[in-house]
Image (cartoon, rainbow, N blue to C red; front, side):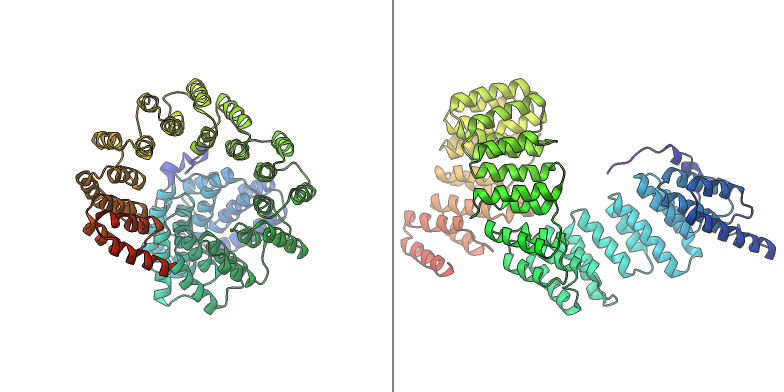
Length: 608
């Protein structure tokens, strides 16, 4: 969350105080009439005159009441004069009369949002709590919703939820705002809980905005079962054709890799927007279908954006020839009318390089106006993927010299294609330009360790590891999984024992458990495997339920001759992957359970 300093807000720290219900002002008929005329005059000026003219009028007008102040503050916000709006609020507080009302607070909350400054939200919150005694329920609900929205915008979801729970009356707007807050914060389970609360209460007529937020929560959590239930609600309510709801459905099914459902949801949208088309085209479609959709979209008059072009270009590898890529390039240049942005340029680069058009790819990359870290990483991987290892390595070294943030997968892709000698040279360059000892440098060491281990140069792999001042879990995992992969299982187990005694290293995750259990299986180390199983049981729920960890445990018990435990684990697994089936089928015959292995194989064949 970004909080910007604002000198205008400093006086507020000592000025904000709750309103005094006893401090009332009794207006005569004449003063009330004067205030009304003043407000009409200022409101008219605010609609047609420059803001500086409006402010001069405001300071000259007699009989200013709360409405007058609100009109001036609102005019400032309309003209993007946020600091001036907040300064007026300070002046209003200093004057002590008239007191701010609910509309004033709503305007100030909007100003805080536009100023990107959240420091005074708690004081405004306290003011609202005192003000609520004087407000009718409907107006109070609106004010609470504005406060909740402000907390949500600044990322204070827990405080937003506190406001939500403290509201005497919650409407559909409030629920939707709270639902959106949880989705934006990545707390998808809580978001779905809020949605379920709305459904269970039966008080609200759910609209397209509610469904859209709930479906985004399902997409973020890959909760396909929940999504299908919400989809049923959507169909019953008749909003499936709405562009927001329909697009959310498409996006959800694409992210869950359910392309047939995504297509159906898309066809149900009455007027798909460019966002709807992009959501569908972001799915796993072959190049031919992607280009057909692109043509259909244009024929219907929908104007593509940079996301559309990137989606089409990235699908060009499947059944699409070089000529089609060149035609798309021409269309993109014509429709965008300006220099290509980085997003589209890198997609075009990848399309050319994957079709073997090295010169065209080079030209696209060299003409990119702004090359960010993502562009460099993808370009290096693209060169390497298509047999241009020298160009990939040269660009990698150039990035090191420029201090670009390189990804682990980028270095891994290069090291897979070069020999040990070139790998050592890259290591030397990383040590020279990679700021040895920094977190970013450590991030690049994992691929180097794997490279040395793949070439069975164990001492060099250990040297790379030991030169790091503080080894994190990712680096330990690279080392231990590498030793396990090349059959150095005893060394892998010794390293694991050393790691778990290090206080600075975080607890093992599913990757680490899978690697070390694989080592136990290789040397039939049953006792060590049991100890690691106990650690798995004590670990968090995500690790305990991980399919890879469960398969590794099966493999370890089956290889170590503890067939009964392997069978028990296999039968308890809620979801079995191919590795778990293979572990049982290959492990059972080795210990006299050939018949059971055949039965397991036949069961797998039936499932397939």
